[in-house]
Image (cartoon, rainbow, N blue to C red; front, top):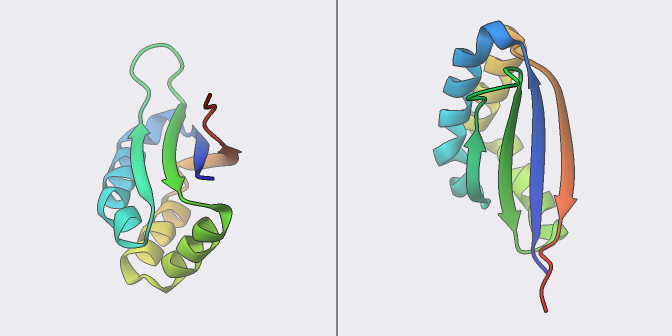
Length: 102
């Protein structure tokens, strides 16, 4: 059974451009490390400090393998450090979802 990781980010609304740069970097890193990236979604209208990402994996075990590969990936680690140094992500929540099928 595949799982989709739904990530909800609370952002510093004055640093949205930095979060967008961070997100764009993941567009190549995530697939390289084994995730099926559905996309990153930025605030457009309304709430200005919430963003989302959706990534699908064939299983929770595949997700765990992906996380291990991310920790070994130089670009991935550089992006994590970029976020920590610039503090544009105030909070991050992960929810694991499964698709409803007949």
